[in-house]
Length: 345
Image (tube, rainbow, N blue to C red; front, side, top):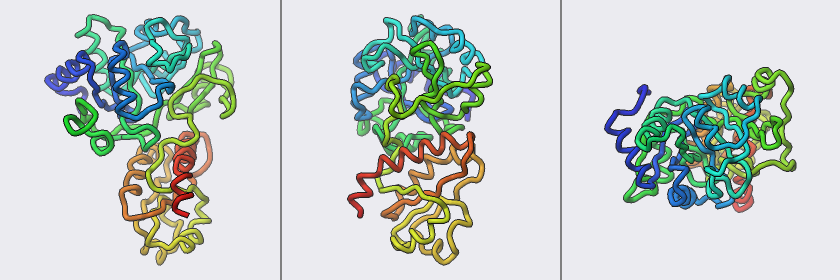
């Protein structure tokens, strides 16, 4: 991964954003579909490109904590401390919005999600675009660069396969900055009421948030009243084929019941007897390390989805705080394929 995009490519991306176009850019989490958050027409184009519901808010990416103040009316001390500890990085903070954060970005809510990405290409684009506009506080509305509810992209090729580049596709410019180094979306912490609540797990774990703030931070329950934020709907990150999540010990019997030739599996290497594994449409070995698993998760799901398999089986990974974000994404991916699974049965 280069420290920054080539100057001519950065200039082209800045020009696309100024004209109200869409730029797919690498971040340390996943690839984002970026538009100028100040341009209502550009923000609307993001929703059209993704097929995203209009009430579903977008995260605004900013260059630093100083820029965040332009998008929020009140940043509590605890939120400032998290910015100090974890920005730039994979942390989104939900804060009271300022007048600059329009309804199209916030989904009509009184809050806005803000993130300062660490990826050098994202930082270069934010600062380059800020310089071009004469405003260091610019924001880029940048949800994941994929169809709404589908598997998130962690490479430029994923974006090309899913949304495509114009004139045939939906994105004006796709920046290829290599694979996303974390491979899983940001942790989201809500400060709408002034006190921290974790809305979505990510690479920054709950105990790290607790340690930074010196107090245990609550996790918002699924039915709890909280701001709408990305990635919290029950079914999300889902492949097109039906996906089942089950314990590794259940895999052999389930493969026999379904017929090995029809099945794609993501599981530890020793989860299936050799004879069964040899007959699978595709078997991918699940990494034993949580960070490696997260980094390869979406690429593995895409490989399974593109295989000859008709059904996808994923062995549940280990428990523990390091695995919380992976479990969250897998559970939502399985829920998102419930309708497909019902059709297949």
